[in-house]
Image (cartoon, rainbow, N blue to C red; front, side, top):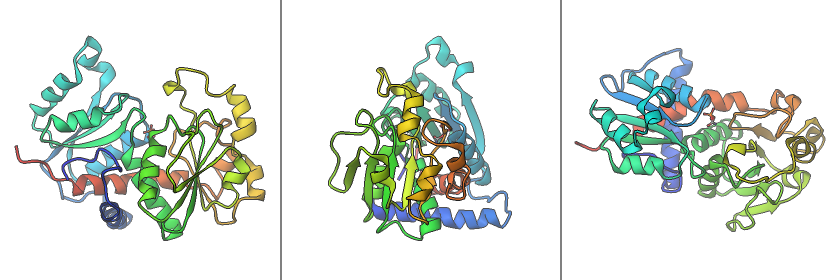
Length: 302
Ligand code: CP
């Protein structure tokens, strides 16, 4: 494939190939090998039109570990603020013969638009509420590392699902395996309908008590043009995952969060920093997973 725009268009076999390649890269990195010469002489640009901590830094590290030359495009200091269109920004970048474009954009479909207009490989680092495919891949990689499988697991996705591109990509990915997916949250932020393999819970305890994986989501206020929850304080009171959950969740249940997290809203500090939390492992696994994605893409001949 030339691009990774979404999980939706990947097969189970594609996903397994990416995860196996990520495993191999993680093993290389664990041998304290800082760089592999695989993509020496090629160039990547990270085009982030929205803020990012984890995705941007781990893409940059992944690119550097693959020996790519890396350009970071800062929207706030670019001519985008003077009204330059996405198309013209793309064509400008293309004039430098860039081989890989990583893009995060507030508009759903922006990554696909860019991919359709360039011979470079395009990786979607999050487009609006549509998809965040590398997050779902690193989440699956992290689950596999701990549980040894995806098939047969019950996975609860808790919180602001309707505004979450992470939830959407995870739904697509986990649905390609034999998993039971649970959407857990208040009715205002959980879809009212779901595919057959998804169960909906409007009660936190019911939704997570026998789940193997509990994946928490931030309330994405930046994507809400109306009040979907009464207040963050009330949300924490009713839906926040606090240390009391340890009295009823499975002993080997793991707690995940794609970040950035809001402590005291969807998660308490005791849970975020507990031994059940694999949040920082997810961050670490972002590098090997993104190396695998970049490595497996094939640029179109110009
Ligand atoms: N998970 C995630 O996309 O985090 P950032 O917004 O910090 O990149």
